[in-house]
Each structure stands twice: as C-alpha cells, then as structure tokens.
Image (cartoon, rainbow over all chains, first blue to last red; front, side, top):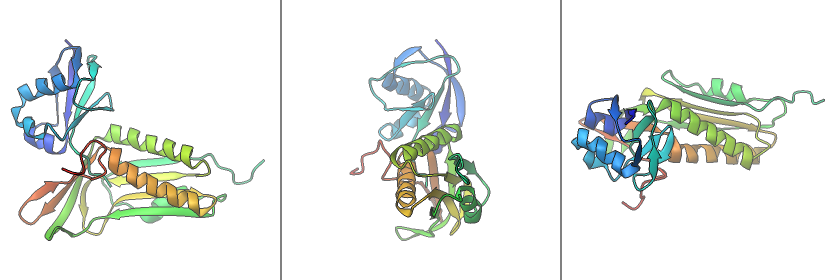
Length: 85
Length: 155
C-alpha cells in the first residue's frame, strides 16, 4: 500500500485543520473509495462530499467509479468548488 | 526574414504582491501586433448587501500554473494569430479595488485578442484551482464560481 500526500485546500483545509499529510492507501482504488478512506480519518469532511473533486497527480478526477492506480509520493488534492479570477 | 517577428510567449505568474497593469501590458506588447487586449478583475466592496472588507486568495499553485498553461495552448489553437499571452493572478490578501487577476493578449488585429482574453478569464474561472474567501464584517465565505466545471449551477 503506497503512501500518498493528501493536500487540503480552502474549506477542506479548514475542516481538517491541515494543509497536507501522508496517508497510506490501497494502490488500486476507485475515486469514491479513496474519498471514503480519507473521510474515515477526517469525518468532518463528509459535509462537502457533494461539492468536491480530487486532483490526482494534478489531473481532475470526479468522485465515482474511476479506478486510480496510486504510486508512493503521488499528490492527491481535495478540490472544493473553485473561485479564481 | 521578418523584422520584429518574435517567438510567441506565455507569461504566467501567481504572486502575493500588488499586480500592475503597466507591467503586464509591457510583457505582451509586440512590434508586429496592432492590438493588446486586457482584462482586469478587481475586488468589489459588496456582495448581496453585505460589506466586503477584503478578499483572500489561495491556490494549488503547481496545478494552477499547469491549468493556465493549458488555457494558453488552447488559445493558440483557437486563435493562431495571437502573439503573447500574460495571465497574472494575485494570492493572499487583496484589498478592495485592487486587481486580483490581469490577463493581457496581443495579436496583429483586434478581434483575436479580444476574443482570446474573454476565453482566458471564462476558462480560468471554470478550471484553475484558485479559491477566494470573502471577508465580511462578522463572517466570511468561500466563494464558488458558477463556471466551476463540476458543480451544478442549479443547486
């Protein structure tokens, strides 16, 4: 099971009280299952489930059935709805 | 051999210092271009009747720069005559009336740079991982762009 770096931004960082942490996850996992693993560690994130997407290795991934193959050191970011510009 | 024919450049920057329209314009000016189009996003002092004290921006910086690079590639595909593109976004505290984003595009004729600038800001708002927090007198709010590509605008 690889250690990935989970990054938290905006509201998700406030809910978790962290900007980043190392998390051990299954190498092959769906994006929804990955979300559930992270919510087990930080239950307060549950409130934003319907609004967030992931960025895995800096590519957007919706929460769902998409199969992820994770490597040690991969960046997985929690992305709340964006508001640049 | 073309005099004044320059290599097209993309200028992308996320920084906490005050943005300068002059500085960003200078980056894209080109002797072969007759048009320079600009968009400047500035902070408003109100939202739905509430007084906004200031804005704070944060970004997933490395990914935001990648997404902005993709926008520049997209612009060059759609408007091949575009010469230089600059997209600067401020991070951290942005006081009221100051610029949070400046986009500048140069092209030989005006239609392309005007259209490209519009495309840049609209796509930035939909895809670039940057977040804005509006600070009011008694509370604050993380904003959500209606353009955000995965959210349902009808919610």
